[in-house]
Length: 343
Image (cartoon, rainbow, N blue to C red; front, side, top):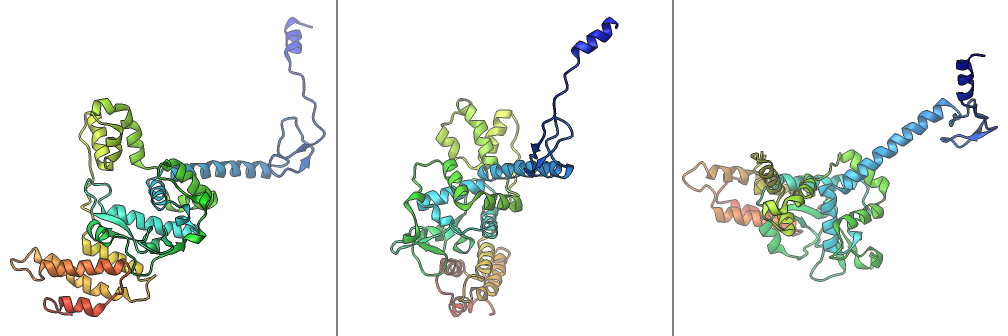
């Protein structure tokens, strides 16, 4: 025997002895392996396990995207304001999608993060009413996009409609304190709603991480160069944060200015959406408001006011009161407008 053959003989790995039986990693059934490294009883089990692992990783990614999204941070802020997790009680994938649509419309109305916020997210049933044992919840039928001023003037009054829960149906275990971090509240919301519901919602809504969070995390490293405190940084709008990033990079910031939405456009949109939840015929106000919207636009092209601004403001204010739950009265709007436009 040559030296090379002896070397090969001494360095060859000893063959592993086969176990008599194994449990399949996928179906957990006992099988007899053909090799020492076989871990699945059949190719179908191997494929199924690989598919399940990919789905699990994808679900984890979707959950992470939800937990770092602006929508989740907004939900956490609302839960903190209410002081209770129960404001999201009973949400399904479909109701979360409806809530997300309202949230996206709110962003659109405000021009996607421009410095001046014209519209607020208003509640039909207040989160903290002046009196009563019911709490307004975070559902699409209890929310609408409203100009800041009418919303502040309305305060926490309650006229009717909306969606709420009784205080007796809340638990101390679901209390949310004012000093609790948003990240912690988001984790609690996920546990409260169930991961399956949140993951499926994130999948259908295609939720993405918030650009705002990414920008703040980056800019926190350059507070001295920016001459800002951490609190000042967190108070900046998303657009302003982008400008600060561009400033650090020595570039001019590219800003998309949408101009937001006009008041009557938002009011008409929200009246049409809430007509599904309201039995008082609020959709009948829409044709009148659409005519007024056209006349308001014509005011800018005419040297004479077709409809006086005080009348426009009065009709708009009444419309927002109706959105806040006041009973719709078509005759009242007609009386306000009959001198200025054909009805």
